[in-house]
Image (tube, rainbow, N blue to C red; front, side, top):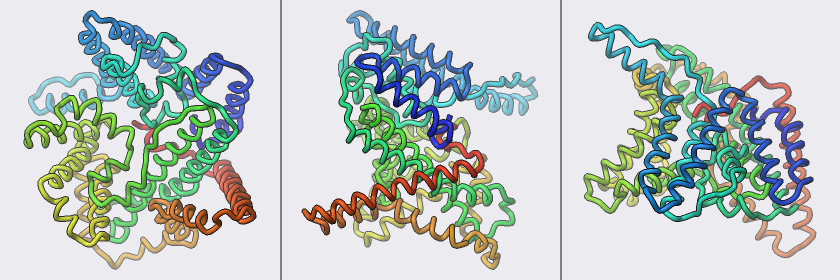
Length: 472
């Protein structure tokens, strides 16, 4: 079930909200848990069993880790079990394919290729389960005695499918006690509509262009068309994923939760290091806290720091998908983080600020080619087209109708901090004038309603287009 679907917007969500606010106390969490299970089962009933097994196993091992005896051993078993689930369902096909390629080169018989379907959201709820076990071991939180509360943490539908990845110590207290108010519900609705609009009106518009370009024969691509394709994809993935995160955060507020931000205008970064402080924040901080720092972080020798960075970003790429291209994408970012540490960041800091932004954006956009293209060889071929190809082809111009130009301009403004700046400017302009403030609020509410109506109409008439990060 997609957030950007009519059945979610007009059936599942209203029923869940009504049921949630009709009950009191601990029954609220039970209603949310039932809704989360229904939400997950909608995408495949058979894989709900995996989610339930994960909940039961982590409930047991959370208790065992909380005991003083052999807590480190139980932590190792618990983390290994969670990773095993992830490897079996996400990486088995990839492993078998590569074993068979090697086997064929030495004349060995191939292994039968298993037909394993990837359970949606497994990368996200597995990392959350690991967070729960590690946080107990570190004594940052206590063992969760309520099965309902732990099950809700692992399966909470607003962020179950594509994040943000919520670390247990950030939400433990909210599972037991949180505040509910009309103002918080209003904030949630506002954030949800903004995210829905990002996805439906912006991401989907860029997807039409990006999908068409990347589905074409690369040998016939002109340089302008190749650049149009990857720029469109850069906007698509940002508004797709940040839109989902906005909706998840908004839904969380509707039910009393405060999730941490997952994006902070990453395309205005001046370095790749800064980019990873702004992009998919919940993932980058998860790897920092649960892998990079335990490996020694920056407290070890320089060469070890570089190795730690390569390990973390190789796994970051591999977390996104079981393919060599995702792995290479992670290494690509790790490489630039290392050369920035070697002195590139100091050199960049001496440049005119727009050049710093151009550097970071250029590296990120080139990196998206490896993220989008299935095979590394094809990705390099596409990158070659970005810099050396026929420029006389006018095919790219056919994409620039009036509607796309409007979407393009809004995307540029929306991926920068223009709208927050505009909001701050208008607040200062209005000052304490109640009339201007009331008119401004009224216009803003009308704008939100208009965005929701337009997005809903588009959903009713548009083709099926799932979130990119549902694959991960």
